[in-house]
Length: 369
Image 1 (cartoon, one colour):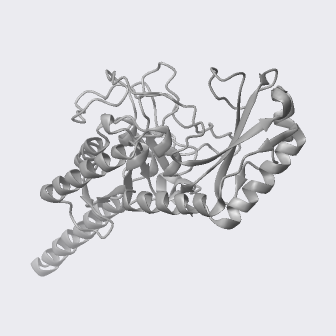
Image 2 (image 1 turned 135 degrees about the vertical axis):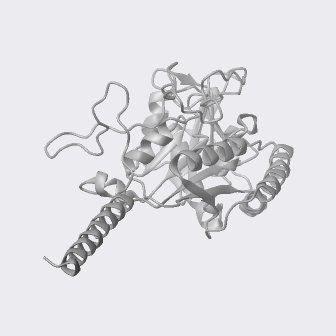
């Protein structure tokens, strides 16, 4: 074999090796990052095998248990997961009862001081507890000193009242909805032998519009986008990284939540990605290049410092997932922009509190729903 042939053979081998190396590198680069095996686990399954039942997803429930397992050695998210060491003393009033601030309230006068059973009230309630897009509620109490409560079997009530919410994120109560409320409550009163005391419709509708205008001007949902810089992520990888920061799976595919330390409260933060990827037949081969982190401001108490949590979570995920934090348009979020958002939030919190609608309060959670 001549020296020319040897040289060509060597050159061809080098070119072939380079092509193979490039293809291998490119295949690795395009393969989504997979969840790493946890200590004691052989693998983290993406989806159950055909024929197996999928474990039910549940929204967070504290019940005195830790919200997240301790981070693996070497992983430092930069903050402590919510629920670990927090004792904020937040109000946990989960009885979202009628409130004159955000409801039309109508007394139901029982004839001749009669008392009515909770069973009778429940039987006479409208089939649907809504009028249009607004929730309707009925409450009773045993006497003037007792607290108002939702009707319950075996209870007896000397006073009843009904109400409908003035506004929510679907808009203000309108004349058609108010008329439907009147019809439903009149039917309830007739069944129970009572007389409703309705207010003036125009006055109540005007109140609804005023409340809706305030809510529209003071509503906010913040969102960050985390975009992959290089290698895409599999759903299992996203789930694993978010779980290390305290997130748990929600009931909706492609959704995780950072639970509140207080039982029954809305989540502090929400993480979402394309649900079609979460439902893919082989999720381990599905590629995610972005996910969203969001904060529903009026739903979360200011004492939890949710915006600070949002920033910390976004920064931690970006660091450990090789991602970039941007807005919806793909623009990088600079520190000065984040500081401006924080200042705007302080003003919003103050405005809500000045109207007795502090973020995270039962009234705010109902109004901004």
